Image (cartoon, rainbow, N blue to C red; front, top):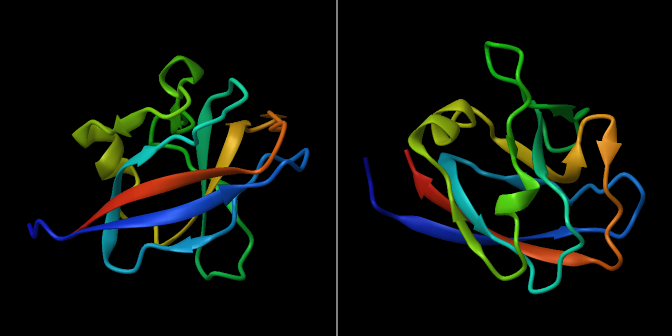
Length: 122
């Protein structure tokens, strides 16, 4: 596996749905993120689509558990590096959005927040 990494800025809006813009991970896998310098406490969940303009749906694993990072781990300014289990679960995702909160319980941010996604080539 290559060690090439890319840092991708992604913005979570202050809208009630708590969603970010979409990013194309191309032939990369998400291995972590850097939390915005300001953050209204919330978990992070992931949405995927088959195309950039497609319908985004929440990501679940084969045990029907939503893939999330708990709010206790999402702290302003923190770098969050995923375990290999989380990285593998998200490995096939090409078009990705982040959500502030979880399915059915989005958390509206007080202002626009910018995260930095950390990816690595397959």
